[in-house]
Amino acid sequence: MVSTLSLAFKSLKRSKLRTLLTVLGIVIGIAAVIIVMSAGEGLKGLVMDQINAFGSDFIQIEIKVPATAKNSVSNAGALAQGVQVTTLTLDDAKAIGRLPNITNYYALIMGQNVVSYQDQNKTVNYMAVSPAFFDMDQSEIAQGRYYSADEDNELAKVAVIGSKLKADLFGNQDAVGQNLKIGNTIFKVIGVLKERGATFGFDFDELMYVPVQTAQKLLLGIDYIMTITAKMKDVSRQDVTADDITALLRARHEISDPGKDDFSVTTVSEAKDMINTIFNGITFLLIAIAGISLIVGGVGIMSIMYVSVTERTFEIGLRKAVGARKGQILWQFLWEAIIITLLGGLIGIAVGLVFSYLVSIVALQFGLVWHFILPPQSILIAFGFCGAVGLIFGYWPAQKAANLDPIVALGHE
Image (tube, rainbow, N blue to C red):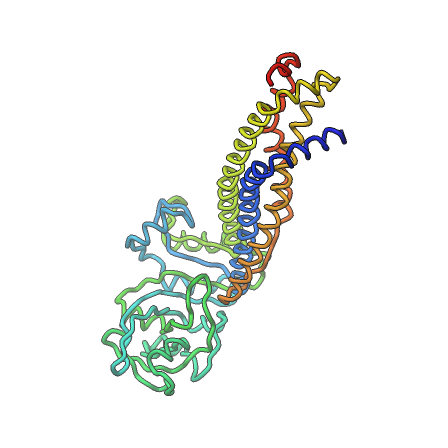
């Protein structure tokens, strides 16, 4: 074994450039596997942290196009193309709020309009929400106040704005008490929120909040809502609560066939499971793509090993003539392939670690809470790939060398 390894190392040293190029192919493939798995875990951690920041005691009820699956591409695509579902209402929200495990809730509609103040005009996304939103959300008031349930019921034309929107429209002057226009309707600014930043790429500081009933009657001319967010008393009963909400809405919407549901109910646990499934699928796909480069590297190893066998035919014949057994010849060439792949694997892991760490540093510079995570299975996968590539692609050239007839081989020179 020792002499066979020694011969393998000497052979690789004689062809340094060839060995280096072969190792490079493995390095790229292994580094790609490490980077993909580390980045995938880092991104998943970022998303999970943002979900956890909202809390685990919430349950989400959203409109859904009938005959499509919950959280499906077909549902999202239909809604994005303008399909309207008008059956979810404020009365539904109130009915959900009366369920025994629900402590609070708010209804929401998203809208967009041109907001004007003096000579400033800006297209703004606004959230029309029930006043309970401010009790349940992380938003904090910096100046002024939130609007009340009475103002919502009275269709008061009041607004609470984000810090960036305040800066864009009002600059350094006080925004509270000022009037602005949403479309052609005058609203009074009664509050400015503290800076919050972006979540999932959504910048809360550029938003405007208005009473949901005011938006329905005065801005949108509708009597339905898009989503309801409810807060649970006992999180351990989230599945039962989801079933209760589903049964309640089916009864209210007169739905007997579950396939025709015009709403979806999602718990935080379901959202996390869905995200895990998505990220695991994406990671698997990217690892498979990275694995292609390892296969290409393996083909390169096989080609180079075949060339090496051809160049060293006389050497092989000489070793056989002095008593080298078939297994010794086989393992000499196999070890050469294995050494190349393991060396490439070690360097690839180091390169992958450094690059993954740099990605986390850059992400932090952009304000993302990105944790540098190296999944232990990524190292196992990397070494597993290395060993498999070395054995599989090194076997046939090694077998060819081991099967050479010593007399024919000696006559090759």
